[in-house]
Length: 224
Image 1 (cartoon, helix red, strand yellow):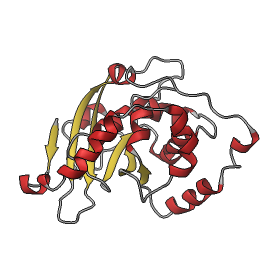
Image 2 (spheres, one colour):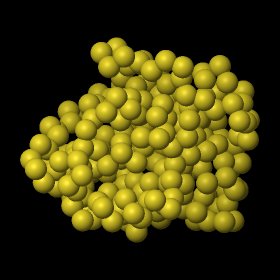
Image 3 (tube, one colour):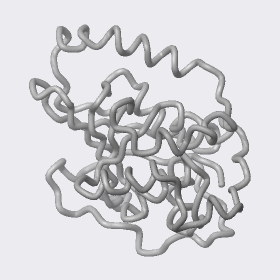
Image 4 (cartoon, helix red, strand yellow):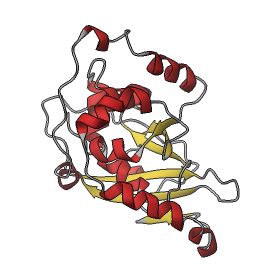
């Protein structure tokens, strides 16, 4: 794992209580029914979020290990995988973390994941709701409010429980021991423009499962 710009050991020790709470969350059983039932409440909930995730464009694999943090060579893959194509097994994720505490400097975290192995740790997804109350454009009031909230910011609140159940790569970054509550993660995705809709789908099961949402979920070792 590559880490650049991490603060000193004394700064890390201050995070122990929070990391202990997070470790407890990470070992609790996952109930997809419970997460879905409360999804409309927690989606967009910045107060109780573990982290905030800002989607950025993927670098080409050839650039990922050599480009600097300030490089402008980020770009999405030229060809998106076909819907029926088998997702790749391994992925190297290189994310930038912007700490909430202004005394901590931004840093990079890079990890290689076995997507097949991670995907095997999560349950099969629930069926998408198809009742009139869950149709696109007819969301509960809390979701409409959360959309207005995020209009001024591209970083979307994410709770560890939902990442564990649906986006294992993101969950692994959150529990890595280097990311703290309230930090912002700049996360490379194949379709960063669809990130807010991806999170909405993960939390609530509402709306259309577009190709962009599907590819974002699969990229983070989720299931669709």
